[in-house]
Amino acid sequence: MIIINKQIKKIIAKISILAIPILCIMIYLEVNLMKIENNYHIKKQFIEEEIKDIDTIITGSSHTAFGINPDFLQDKVFVLAFPWQNLYYDDKLVLKYLKDMEKLRLAIITVSYPSLETGITRKNFYAYYYGIMSPNTMGWEIHPEKYSLLYVYGMRNSLELAFNGFKGLSEDFVVERNGFLHNKVEQQQELDDNYGRGVLMGMKEKYIKENVESIEEMIRALQERNIAVVIITIPQFYKYTDKLDAEKYGRMQGNINYLCNKYSVEYHNYLFDKRFTAEDFRDIAHLNPQGAKKFSEIINKDIIKPNLCL
Image (cartoon, rainbow, N blue to C red):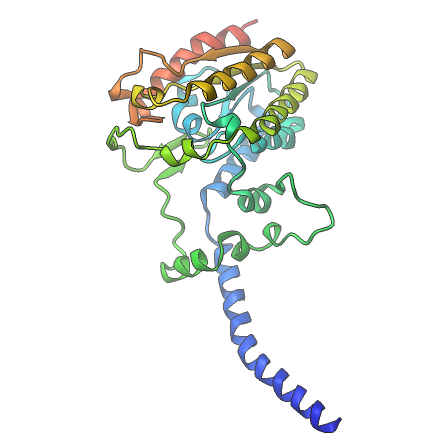
């Protein structure tokens, strides 16, 4: 028995020798990751600083975040949209901040071609920065993504950031105070019809039900506050729209029509809008600043003025 206890102590001592340096590295990474101001953190900060004065919010993913610039819209507009943000997080962000948006009068919900058939991504970032958990999360589970940036980034990315001096992620855009995303380098990419193929191939019909439910939850919460709701689809380049699957597009339009009829909501579909040419696009799926200005002026006339000037 004494021999066994000595062996156990030796094993524990050896494990400790290995564990202590690893623990120190993890603490070092965690502390320094907290100093990085990534764009999730910046966006959250701007939302919470501007929230009391916002009268229009616009939800969506990167198509909207790069495609609508509040500088060309009347009144106080904030773009809640963000790259890879699906309808579940649109919904939860609206619900999270709705009670504090005392002046809110209009909500524009973007439904792009992939939106209804796209699942959740970036869930760890939403858990950490916004406290929004993914829908399949159990209440009794331990959630390291709420408390640890090392868990959020993952060990590989965390080490890469450490070797880079914790200078932050190599994101090619900055977040403006109104939520608009501005590219650091305004250079048009090749308008290649292969762009975004991975996203389109990842579309699955099984996600439609949960995404429609997210939109419905948003609409109900907004309409309870007598806030006008409008659904839009962002314009995209013909090399993108020419590749759309007719069946998937039909499902998208069918579900939007269902929502509009059930909740008496307007819908403006700019997807195939011929007013937008190659000069208006950064790539085949995203407007550039010139295109964003043009589109913002259009929705200001079509949607914002009619709804805010009632």
